[in-house]
Length: 162
Image (cartoon, rainbow, N blue to C red; front, side, top):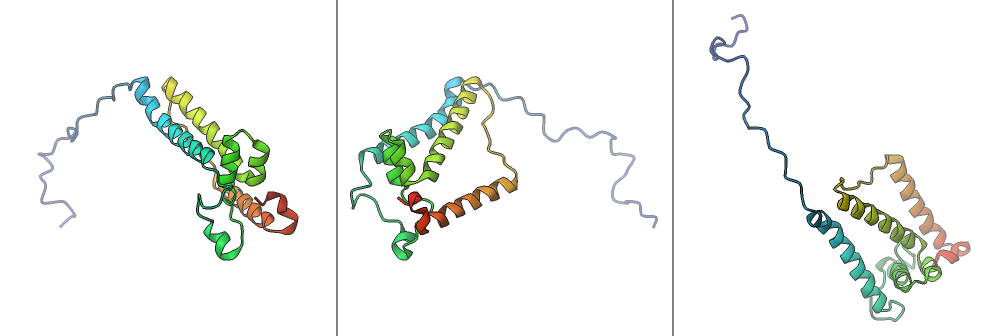
């Protein structure tokens, strides 16, 4: 044997095979209302959550569960004070919101910026924005959150505690 394939007659196979699947036609353009539906629903969910927290005060005991980490260990997690922060933010009191949880308020502004960008792009027919950061930036954000947790649990970082 010389290594030839004896099962296929090479003289009978065409040089160019027809495509197995016909090329897909481009999708028809979506209407502006359809493009805005998804980001508008996310925004409506966030507004509804803030409206609920704005009306049901987390400063009154019994309305929301206590943070399990705080209850079991006495350590404030990165989210501790987030509901009080959202309540103050919903009422327009940014100083109190930052005092309850500065990291959460920063997240509210990042979310607002992302939603604005998404809605503008959806309105204009552009692509959905993506948050693409190199891995070192994600590690830096995680380290920042860790430093926030450590500092707010130490005596000199009490200004970061809710």
